[in-house]
Image (cartoon, rainbow, N blue to C red; front, side):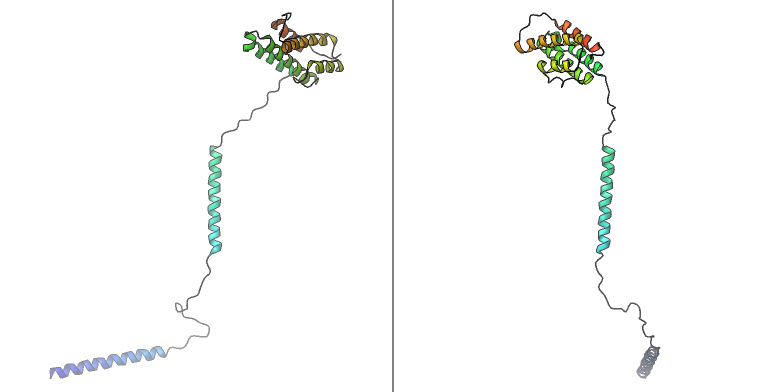
Length: 203
């Protein structure tokens, strides 16, 4: 008898559950339809998207610019400081007298190498004439070329005569290797200094 009652109760419970599910299904089915054009979210089908190439290129460009700025900053920090040096402008007289001073402090002066002294004296004289009076072409001019230039430049005879004597003596020493020591190196340089300190060479 107990089994019969249990079976009856189970049957009654199953029937009530079936009726409840049917009622819920009927309620769902009875909901009104959505208006045209409306969609239910999260029920859309999948669709393909293009790869974000523009965003990728922008990121690459940003990295390149950042690396360049870092490199430029590092180069600017580690670059040596360039000090601007104003050129020292010296008169032709000052340059010539400084050259004579260097000659007197050199080894060739101490060794009394008259040939080298003559070469320096001739170079200083010709460069001074070019810088101070625009006469000649500098040290490259030979005596045969230089003297006529001085004559054409209307150089005074008081200046021309000692120059000619000095250069002829220097050519004799330089090119023949002989010297009668008629002009010592001290006298030679003294004559050169007097010429440089003389103003107004022209007539």
